[in-house]
Amino acid sequence: MNNIPSEEDIHAYVDGRLDDTRRQAVEVYLAQHPQRAEEVRAWQRDAQELRAALGSWMPEADNPSLDPSALRAQRRQTWRARQAIAAMLVLSIGLGGVGGWQAHGVRQASREAPMSDAMQAYRMFAQQRGAMLDVTEQHDGDLQIWLDNHFHRAPQLPNLQAAGFHPVGGRLLALSEGAAAMVLYENAQGNAISFYIRPPSKVAALPRGQRQEGTLMAVYGPSDGYNVAMVSRADEYDADVARKALPTAI
Amino acid sequence: MHVGKRHVLCNPSKIGRFRLMTPRDTMTHDIDQSLREWLPRLRRFALWLTRDASTADDLVQSTIERALSRWSTRHDDSALRAWLFAILYRQFLDTKRRSKRYAAMLDHFRGGRDPSGAHGHAVNDNATYPSVEREVMAQSVLQSLAQLPTEQRALLLWISVEGLSYREVAEILDVPIGTVMSRLSRARQALRRASEGEVAPPSLRLVK
Image 1 (tube, rainbow over the protein chains, first blue to last red):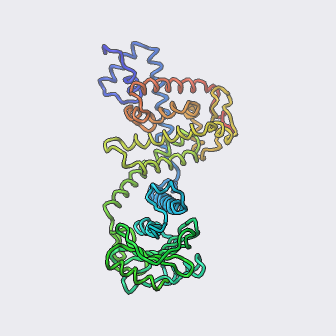
Image 2 (cartoon, one colour):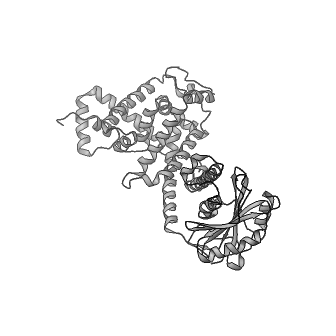
Image 3 (cartoon, rainbow over the protein chains, first blue to last red):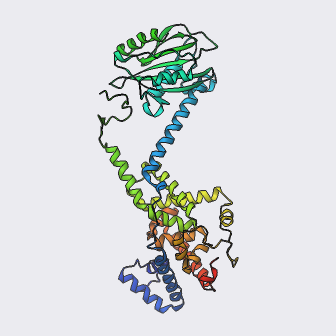
């Protein structure tokens, strides 16, 4: 070999990664440089010892906390929990009157835009569905019991079965005035209608009425010490169902 | 389609009681399977890098978590092996950096110090290794390896045990191949010196 082997050649020789031609060339070089050869052969012995010591070492047993599928599922749960907390924070901070959050599109409930919180809740939770619910209607009446547990003298939840909507689940929300709740109904097409209840605002009394905002329609009014609303898509059929449901809640 | 009180809320592929595997399911299944295949080797590397069994598995766990969350950033042509080892190694360095008392803490838990006091690293006193490793550790090359600085130990493990190419190591360390070669020379020299420093037979070094 006319050239001095490079550092990479030497290491590749130690690691047995050279083809025959280059390996022989390195050996010729080493034969002419005994001190270097001694070091390189010592490196070779060390490398082989290391490989022999550990090359076939494998963990004794599987560690289930390392399983990718399990970690993936945990990640999803954590993500959902964070989303839920973030959503709750946005709602509660926005409606608590902290002006800075208005930039996030959460408008304060006001005379000009009543029940924007009900619509916001619908947007956030009706569209994310199952991941966000605190309680589900496993058996008939579960949701009413849940509502009664959280709201003193809670109104009766409307029954939308005749219109094809079935109660799915509920979610508690935090407002500065106190707890609010949303109960979600769904029909076979996956369309949602929500029932929304919250303590009355200290700022403005809620008149009975309805309001459209974008693709959503809300009907609302005071009811037995609370303010309630039904929110639906602004579709004619759905809005009609919501409108008709309100008198039963009030 | 009305399927009773439990409503289909999220997954459009659910039909009746039967759940079809969506293309997305197949993809995540394949990804999980690939990662699973690398677990034993990641655990081996982590163990001999950190010299602590529970730290090693914690490191592998956070590696898998990161791999899952960053999967979409992977270039298809980059080797999964190098990518995973890179995540693991950087996690290890981050942990070390964050906890300046890491080495002191490790020494404290082990309750042992290098008898020669020469390197300031705790020679393994068998406290944190499972029993099988203790037998393996009786081999002096591993005791010498344990005395090396982290990066040198990592280099030798990658090259001699895990069989990574020099290019893969360069990718992991984000340095040119030439730099890998000179660091490898220093690592091999250091291993040699540590082995030559083993004047007593290994059995006298083991803390009973």
